[in-house]
Length: 133
Image (cartoon, rainbow, N blue to C red; front, side, top):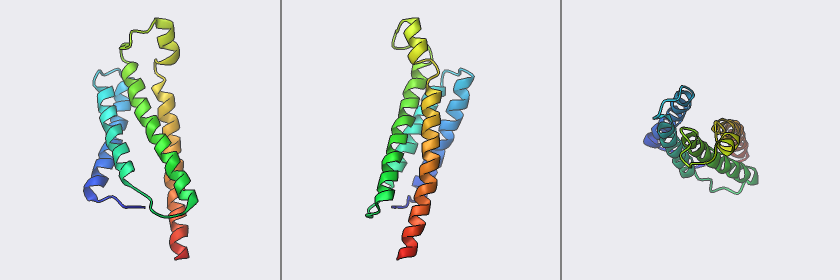
């Protein structure tokens, strides 16, 4: 996998930190929380897209696809978090509560579990690949 440089690593970590702060602030209903979370998610996702894999290991390629799906879920969490603050799409209340209100937590949880799994599996696969060489 292509390694990120020092500045890209800092952006990745700041994005993750912004997502954590934004999600905690959203619990306390701060109006700026969805924007902070969205900026962090965008920074995090962009830096993960910059990590390319040029090898031929099918397992790592599959794990990269899972990581991309997880990144899409992070961005969906940002959108749902924004939509959860005040019903900006002007849906009727029953539809809003059923499909939008606080469902960002579910997509964020699934994305976090997938990220955790993928990061550990990719590192093990890369170690195996390095031992073969």
